[in-house]
Amino acid sequence: MRTTIGIAIDLPEPWGSQLTRRRAVAGDPQAAYVPAHVTLLGPTEIDAADLGAVERRLGEIAAAHPSFTLHLRGTGTFRPITEVVFVAVAAGISECERLNAAIQDIDAIDRATKFPYHPHVTVAQDVPPPQLDEAFRDLADFEARFPVKGFTLFEHGSGGRWRPHRDYVLGSAFDSDVVADNGG
Image (cartoon, rainbow, N blue to C red; front, side):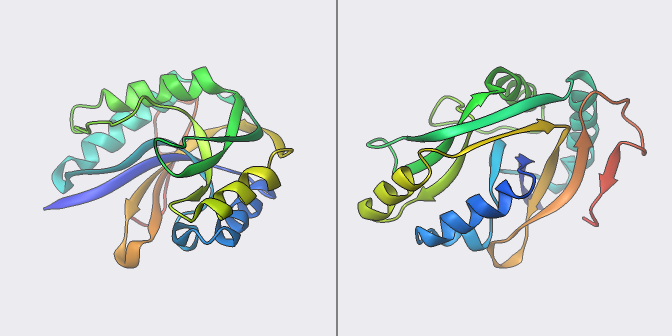
């Protein structure tokens, strides 16, 4: 049996809901299923039997990486390669890259990537060019700065929704006090 997982840094309020709403305004259907976040591992299929080992390794990775400040500022785009507009990560890039590299090294994760890892917050994807342009302009002055104290393991649920499975706290010993089970 297989399951699909993803790993992301959730955005705190008020920014998370603000950027999720902006994605919905652009007409991006994913806004209804995926809250605003910075991806550390995109949707990846694994053997369900390997989930426990992945969880243990994520606990070790979280323990080995300290919390950090994430600074989001302005917009960027991956056009013409892909039809994506995003809010840019201005500080915290190397911390996200280190977490991504450690996660990609987990034995049970075998995910070929099309593009190099680039931390960002998607605000419009696969919508007509006028909506991409509008999102790019509307958020050009966006700015947020907040501490990142952890990340979340998500599982792909029914109906296309991502549901939180487990939270991991950065820089903490890996035990039951630092891992919150989200009912997954």
